[in-house]
Image (cartoon, rainbow, N blue to C red; front, side, top):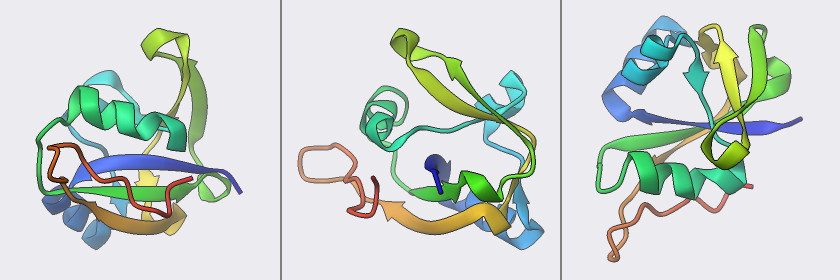
Length: 114
């Protein structure tokens, strides 16, 4: 089982849970795929794209449960990032945690992130 992570505003995530799938956030829809991060990429993704933004969740997604086209493609600094060319079914989600902001202003990564 490989785990990848999706950052999402909590209200949008709640809508997705009610529907049973996530289409993605606005950048996902614009790019035509859902952006994910690996565990070692999560802190930098938060720093670069979500600095100071509250009301976010992080969802751990089991790649073995995905039925859509998951590709690892070069992105920031040539690193490979997971991109899902389909909707994210809630059945692939292993867990969801809120992303709190620490006293230093950075998001606190949940301990379960590997």
